Every structure is written in structure tokens, then in C-alpha cells.
Length: 96
Image (tube, rainbow, N blue to C red; front, side, top):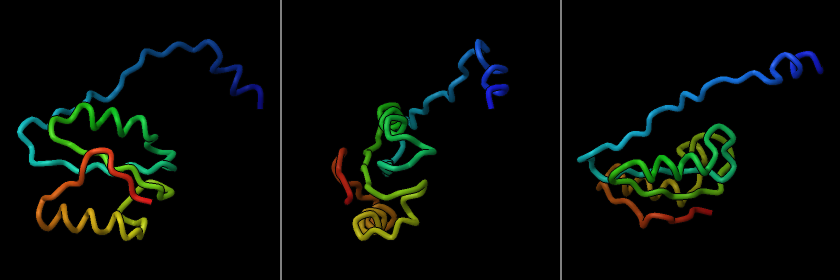
């Protein structure tokens, strides 16, 4: 178990982050971030919201990566409103 750790110790790699998007001139954008999403930690969703020109972020208590499959009435209602009428909730809304 120590060999992989020893192999990577001291290995310096330059960061090459994905450039943040702005979506200039887009319609309202709805972002839903899960509090328990290990693939996209919440702080990264906040950073994406901050980089997008016209986005709101809803935080959800669902587990896993993918709010659409969470089967939560709150999320389902937000998605129905968004995809039907392009209505977004207030930024910072929470679904429990």
C-alpha cells in the first residue's frame, strides 16, 4: 500500500483547470447541487454559478450525482417550472 503513495510523493503537476463558462446572453440557467455529491462538491457548483452570467443555484439534500433521478417532489417541481415556463426559483433556494 505504501508503494503507490511513495511513487506520487513530491510529484508536482501544474494545475490545468477547466475554464469557467460565462454563458453570456443565455436564458435563465438552473443549477441544482447536491449536498452529498462526491463527484461535484458543492463549492464547485457555487463557483460555476458565480461564473455564469444568468444562473441560480438550488442546493438539494439528495445523495449521489444527478438531481433529476433523486425523486424529490421539490426538485421535480423546480424542473417542471423550468422546462415548461423557463421559471427559476430565487438563488440560494434549498430542497429538502
